Amino acid sequence: MRHLWFIYSFRVRLLLLLVGLLGLTLGVQYYVNLRSVRSNAHLIVEQEQAIMAGVALGVNSISNRKYLDEMRKSSREPLLDEHTGRVTNVLVVDSEGKVWDSLVKDYAPSQNEDESTTYARISDVPLPPLSRALELADEGQPAPSWLSASAPAQPGEPGAFYFPVETIQGRLYIIVELGSSSTLTDILKRQASKSALYTLVLLVTTTLITGLLVWQFTRPIKDLSVAARRVAGGDFSVQVASKRRDEMGALAYAFNDMTAKLGHTHELESQLHHAEKAAVVGRLAAAIAHEIRNPLNYINLTLDHLRSSFAPEDEAKREKFKRLTDQLKTEVGRINRHISDFLKYSRPSILELQPTNLRVEAEDAMQMIAVQASENGIKTAVEEVGKVSLVMADRETLRSVLTNLLLNGLQAIDGHGGSLVIKISQEHERRAQIKIIDTGKGIAPEDISKVFEPYYSTKETGTGLGLAIVKKALDDHGGSISVCSKPGSGTTFTITLPTVTENPQGRG
Image 1 (cartoon, rainbow, N blue to C red):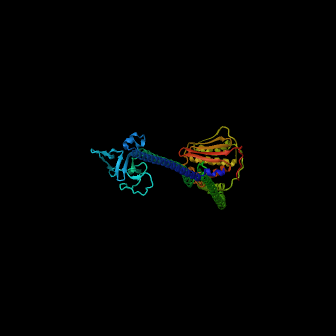
Image 2: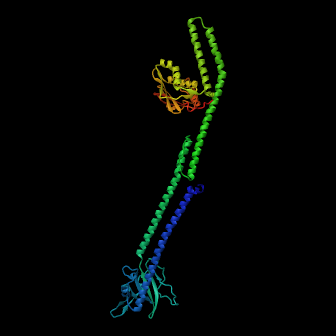
Image 3: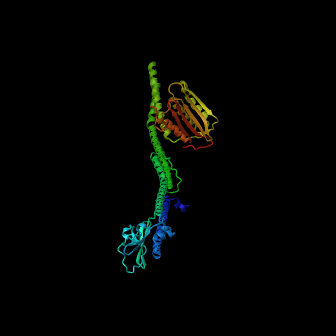
């Protein structure tokens, strides 16, 4: 199909359109001009026929010694008809300018009472532009003084034509006066109007076709402009739909390929940023573990030694001394837990995946917080919906994940009352689902997208690593976690894990 690329090229189609429009325009103009030529030719032929009819009438009048009006009445030539004919007057004039005969009675010879004849002068007859009917040899005879040359009449316009005739009385001139061809002129005007209408229709049609083609060409450009603005705003999932096979289709395909590559690059950059952050955390955790844990262990041992060897004899002082040392040991333990969180998040996970019963692990995790929940009047429950397959998981890690989420739920429930529920179900054949539902204060909408980010916490004493560690552990299991919350109505964390049929590989 490569040899047919030019069929789908916008440039080729535009060129073909322009060639077609040019051919159509030339064809219409040729047709209009041809009709005009035919109309003009018809007028010229009619004018020649009218001149010949008038000359013939004049010659017959001279040879038969009859008046022109009598000859016209006996003639059947429609061009000589006094009402509808083209010939309006025929005159016979001698060299002196005397009118011997005329179809118009006003200029015809009149008989006097003394039987003499009065002739009109040609100068008294109003005539249109006068020209010679035929160019004949003049035999050296000069033209009469009354005959003056003028511009010839155009076909269809009023005009007068003379024709010299040699007779025994001398040279006579037959003058044929023609009226305007109003009927044919009207036809010609109508034809001119039609040609203008044809041209207008042609221009409107070509404009509409060109406009439609330009609109089809610029519409994908507008779509590309909108998509480019979305890409500039960070949305790399946008795709431009285009089924065209021309240059715009190729451009849309290149744009979609570009956005896909940009999205992949952005994802790689995010992963690299996350990896860099994890590496920084790892180095920080290692430094903390090395520089702080040894002194903390010494402080912890020293506190035990002080409490056993240097407790005051006085009962009240001993009680106060014990309370203070316990508080110090608690704070030391808290610092140790923070260090452990850093290490858990920064170090690669080593998982021992095995078929695990979710209900058993959920009940074990719930038992760890049951006493604290009971003291605060919080109802706890583990629910299993239908039959749930075993999942591939590291039991200790999974129990730690569930405990972390349950502790968050307890802390989110202010005061007494409320509920904390773990609901287990089969999402589909290869995935199991765990929901941890609390009736706590909920999470603000602006915090929802940040809860799994490291070092982000809404608690005053939190490190911001709890949920980040949870997400990392579930990612290492090939699972996922999401959150849904509404302020004042509680929070639901949803976990999905692969079942034993999927056989995932743990990440080390």
